[in-house]
Image (cartoon, rainbow, N blue to C red; front, top):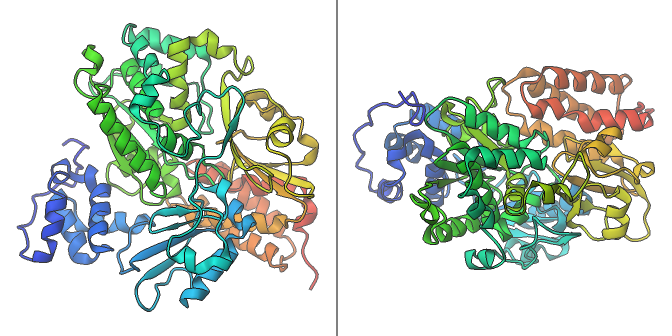
Length: 590
């Protein structure tokens, strides 16, 4: 039986007579034939109707999609944005991850809870509001930030708590800076670039160039460009495409990983909200190269505006002849399915993302086999993140040689860096590979805020490592950062001034990983909890003799024995701090 509908498919029970479920049956009429793969959108639709997912609603969703009720409950419990119990009419997600915590996120959370007379995770007495402590919302350049009923609010002021509760305040827009902007050329207007605007500015010329080439020639051009993945692993994009193209299988897929959940990262959010057609064009070119007719875009659940922008962009593309059965009269056919996540950091890992698309809990699997041979639905799959795909149209329009003229020999092209924290001008910076960290931080971003001094920079996000002030002249390229022992990761540059207690920063990172571990493998499930407990003691001034060694032991165990990248990098920042500042981890005297 095809994995597309799930091996658990059974005949549906007879429809129940409960008229309260009639709106749900109507809402799921088009989704029901898709079976289990429609489980996440079906649960989103059900929750929008009823406010949460009570037993009768969950049972009806399972009946309509032919999914066992136990599996429906398993999915609801796995994702943090699904609620099996009643919640307030408006949910406030208050970010307290590093950038927002440094900007006063905890104070915002305390003020909101105090005003409503509740604690985080509780609902107000009038059932109007539920307040939750949220992981990074991808609004780091506007910290502190929160979502109020799904609407983003930035620069939140705890002194204006009544306005915050009502969803009033600063509406975040992309703060974009750069030199030789390619990926962000259409960004900065504070709104979505329409299809007509995109085409008028040269959009889809890359696709038009592709339609006159063989798939092999397209892959050769990508390989010649030197493009590598921008999600952190830096795998050569052309080799990935070639592997999927050559893999046996009648059905192949292209997947866009837009589950940008790494704390401190917001580049994909800006690209999707303000120029979604560029990502779509990159997917179309990838599909042509590997002979795929279907693609999926998986957007993190905390990005409602990006999801809406993509919905509008896909509709325009279909209307304009850029999606469908006969794209631009070429005979090439490609369609895109949009999926909204539901709150799970682990779904940024590619195999976990595939499971989520299939309507399952986002558990990663051991590799090999790799997605290029056994990916989505067990078929050959190319999966790239948003920034990677946004490079593709430029390469196919201008050629690999022109692309390689930008950046360095080993790191061609431009890179998006997400600057936040104690920096004068936080925002998204697009620069050619090879500029120095000093140029980026001091020459472009205005340096450290106010009259403060630089203490440290966290590179690569929560799964990254720390740099010190004496590393400002490091070259911002794959080879330059590798030489300095720093990860490029997802492009996070979190600036920390001398007024911050690094123990507090580390506690926040530890809390994040302890919350986000999926629990599939014991090294990560237990290791992230033990790491957080020790970092909590450290931040509270109550560390014990031997805690530094315990952190190192737990960290290396997770790095060596965890199944996926979450556990393998959950201790990276802590291990980095242990090496740079061992005095931070000395046991406090009682």
